[in-house]
Length: 222
Image (cartoon, rainbow, N blue to C red; front, side):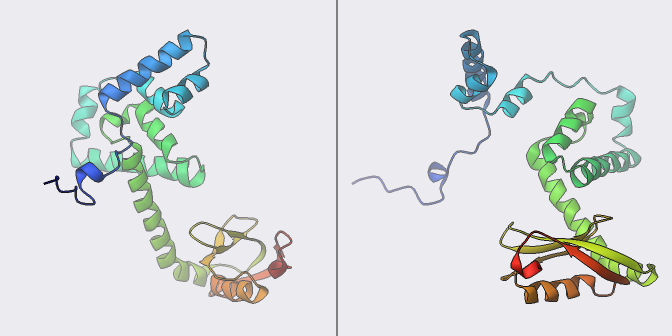
């Protein structure tokens, strides 16, 4: 009798993860080095070896220096853990949220600063932390909006409006002066009526007057 087929979803049937094992890494490093010795540029060499340039840079990075004993002891204390978390939150806030530089730059910062000795600096680890942080930011903004709106002085707003297409269409509007996001709402339409309804919701409870809206030449915004 023929062998029974592997069940769908079994280990044998799954796609291999993109994590490079040590043997693959050694083979690809050798292939890149050989290609460069043959006169190829690094870009051409990594392309022929099937490895990203960012991965090659990571592989070739010098190992992190061991942390000072006093610092290693400190981060094992409750105060040290809080301090590490403050640094991590600050890095994500300044680099990713304010600087729009992305999670990989946070990973690079952790590696170069030596903090990777105490904080996981892999992309997966930091991407998961970034998701959690952004959820907390949105939750905090929602909780504080009503309280802060009650005390805000009257402001005149000039709005910048457009659509984005992440996970479907979203209507987005920001205050052109402060950059504050007033509206980011999924919508099935981008007509004038849809924009009016969305903006009324986005401005609800705020002590503001809209003096102008700026946009491209989409008919729903003119």
